[in-house]
Image (tube, rainbow, N blue to C red; front, side, top):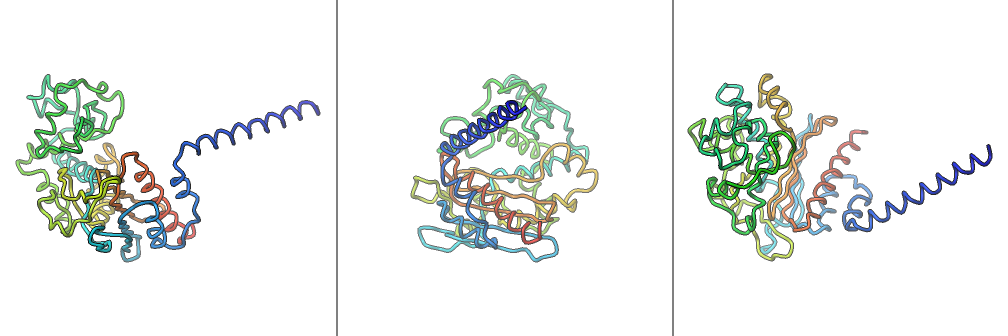
Length: 351
């Protein structure tokens, strides 16, 4: 009995050593700045966390918090414009990148609910001209495109796209035409901006109006959102927060990737409406819930963002950070700091 106990004890010690060695090796390959961001003591306030985040190389930060029963709170640190030393402005406009997919999915939901689109119709039902140009087009459904399960290659992954972005949807689509599929429809998941490029083109085809105009009509106007725009061309450039890419000195905000632009407050109002059912009726919510998610992040050169609703504290948190990098560490830091902001809110509620 004593020998058996001793063997068990020895095995536990070996396991602990292996675990510690494994942890050490893992940490060795993780940039220490990420480890530091996780391990620093949690500040007492959101503003302290926002200020603390500047140490990780961000030029400017905006955080919007909407907690149920409280007035929305705005936090910022750093620069709106680094060159001119203009302080960050919590009401500034920002390139929201893929957060816009939430708006597109809501727009598709409304069209499906009104029987103007079918989630189970195929890409070639809507675009017969793509037969033979996009592999499996006759089998890819609208539902699969919304859910990134189409297998269509991502046009933003094509060589040199971010240095020379296309100006028109048709030009962007040309980048992936005649390429092989990444997988058969519904056999895998892979994030592809081409799915939502085609969705925006489909919205225009079905409604007979520009994609953003329809978004404005069915989402923005009903919510009273005045600080959301469809293009860089539609904004006062001075109202747009500058964007920076580590290793490049100049401001990249004038580069047009064709993305939506909005204030953190507008994104927050939209996100709460999407989650609480005030944007979509019960039937629409059932459709939406079956096809897409309710939170999203966004990342393009110079701009990264996170918009999340946290049900346990009934709070919306929108975070904008205007510095990105090639390695993706800044994105990791955005996720970490966003998590810490939410922890502060939970702690304040005694959770």
